[in-house]
Image 1 (cartoon, rainbow, N blue to C red):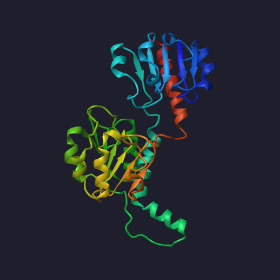
Image 2 (cartoon, rainbow, N blue to C red):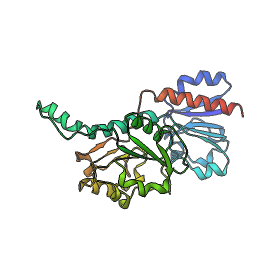
Image 3 (cartoon, rainbow, N blue to C red):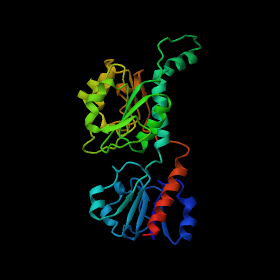
Image 4 (cartoon, one colour):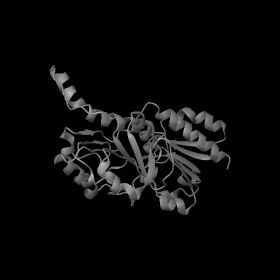
Length: 302
């Protein structure tokens, strides 16, 4: 099989000999924005991330399958892929562990006032706080019960939270107390203390957490967004935080990235903010390589 590998797979070059021994013919593109090392029509399979943002999808006339190094599908032309009947693999499960750990650590940082204590540590000031919160017994609602949401559910449930999931496809899962249909969202919001967004961006989920739904949350609620920025109305969320209508937010994604330097979110004490970095973990490369090699084996059997 003719395979085009890109630098989005960090360990690609370490597996070149193995793949060649399995009969594959390889071309390697270190940076997806650079000129292709082969004719686009030559490639029968590609391992990439944002390749089709820089090179016209229509030119890849020989494609049989696409393996993405991302979990999200928003950087590929889905309608064209489906119309051509191509097999599409994503990196489901690869980044879920570090993202779930980030969500948990962010909520704990807010509950335990870590910013306050770090500031006092730097200043050499011994000052106690009497308003620290516990996770035990908190009501957690997770929007999107895929791999990331489920890893979040496991961790919050392990700390004795009551975890409810909302998903387009409700099911029984031991990681959750229950998984309900998305239609239950508005009823759940007033009793939700920690709201975690892990669902993919689509026309149906864009702006799902709008001003009205943010307004249904209590003043003790924390919003965690590790999905896509546009799933939440960023302006409405910023306004609610500034007005003290929420306890805080843990935000890794934003409607426009990088986040504008003048955004008030940067300086809010009750916001834990990171630059779309929650997916990073030292186990990612091994998980991604294992997944890619398994999917290539499946392709070889077809």
